[in-house]
Length: 70
Image 1 (cartoon, rainbow, N blue to C red):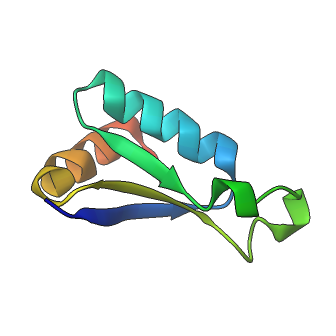
Image 2: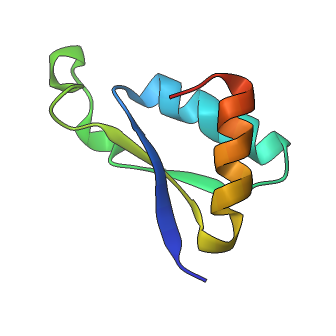
């Protein structure tokens, strides 16, 4: 199973909140590039990617729509 990008968010806090909500709903997720997004002004240049397993992508997209995220 490969990881695929679910969404890119402008800062690590939003990405971690979404990741936590996905995890609590049973969808494994990880955040990539959060360490690159240290300064607020850099947030738009280096977004944080929320990644999920390719098998979970459709479920994660539905949950994200339900959460009103992204």
